[in-house]
Image (tube, rainbow, N blue to C red; front, side, top):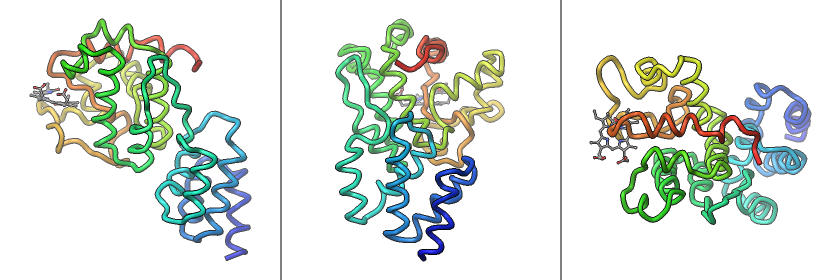
Length: 232
Ligand code: UYC
């Protein structure tokens, strides 16, 4: 295995994203020595904002039973690899943990809850949002939620991904919904079991926004200044 490790270590550090993506699961299969390489990799990159490649490496360690991996994460990344910044005193640990575990369905529920928390107690009670509340939502908090989704989904899921697709289709909802798997022909995808709760879903499939009360809330979210400003 020493040979295998050496032949994987270099391309993990210097290779393209595509190469890195292939190497991470190979290292995961090599036991403790593979985990050591992933830990070294994460530490080396920790000065830079986390990408979905960091997410992949982190998830291997997070989902491993190895005591050394648990101890490493506890001491070096106790809150994960995305800074859980909030202007509203909101705790994003549960969302971080569900996404690290790739439990996208539970993460989607928590995302809806956190969005309501961000708008205050009346929205929490109501369990859904007015578009005016979304317009006034903290950009810092939206970026935190979005970064968690991006980093833990190979860059496939998140509001910014949905925004990019929506803009590329000239904000045409009838083209947008089928593109992200929310509608097929005349049929809305049924909540929750019609949706695809893993990475085989189309880009932009998650997180969900209920369209029952119209598109205005989702339009506000996708138009929020958070997505055109640089991260703070
Ligand atoms: N649901 O169909 N949705 C719910 C979606 C629609 C409906 C929740 C998404 C169309 C009802 C989430 C789509 C529609 C409820 C989503 C979708 C509809 C409900 C839970 C594809 C009928 C029960 C959170 C666009 C034609 C609750 C929440 C209620 C729930 C998401 C029906 C996350 C992306 C137009 C009856 N749907 N929703 O908001 O509000 O309750 O009555 O979008």
